[in-house]
Length: 137
Image 1: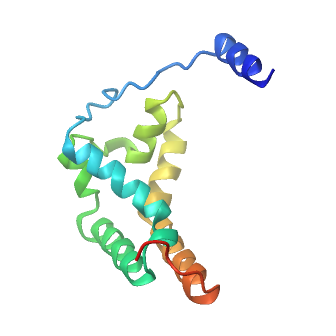
Image 2: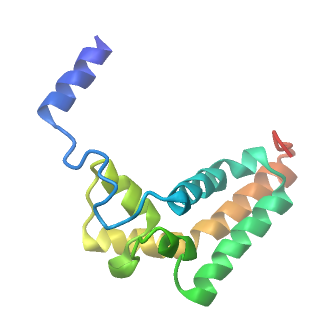
């Protein structure tokens, strides 16, 4: 029954832009897949890797935004971050989500400023305060 509801919903509300990776000119090269792997590692890292590895990684990303004022990996796969465009908005738009310019700006500011500081705080809280050991190393 649940599957029928999902199928009928998709029939009435088709995805507007189904997995179109070329909407903003991004190239699906090795840098794109590396960027996606780094993004996944960034979100799963507090559970998988030691806090000192994650804090170092998050700090490097944060410093990249401070020093270069852009994401260096975006350049490597031809994703222009003009008009507040980020890898996050690119991925979400690739699966059909749409954003206004104001929403893109909010996402851009969140990713470039507090996101990695929040992830640092969460990693330290999870591993040092709560005492959970990383699953891998």
